[in-house]
Image (cartoon, rainbow, N blue to C red; front, side, top):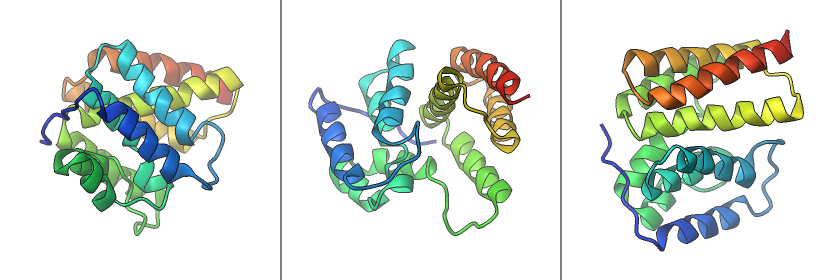
Length: 177
């Protein structure tokens, strides 16, 4: 299990500056990028999570979506934060969606809290965006989210976030029907 993130009051602005620089010139899909990172951090802030977990939320997609590397996250935010970002990052060398998502879920659950908390908040933020914009969510994405939810429930992790995610999966499924 990864160590809990730690953070000083200066780390959140540092993370935001890191993200602004990382996403400069990067094309992102609607509902992703900086607004998504902030949305994930906001889910956790509203749920009472500490600033270190919110910083992890801000950084969770930076390696996947930008040219930034886990090593650059380590240099800027330390080894524990880099390890957690790495656990939340899909392996691009795995070509098949189902295997890539299975590997991601395995690493996420193995890392425990706060990695699982950020993964759940990520899905909550994505589904909130889909519900607000009335965007269809693919069946395979909803299956991935449902499996992640079941794994978190089985591990008795983040019950409040699990409840929110369960409700949003149902709403998104009704949009997609």
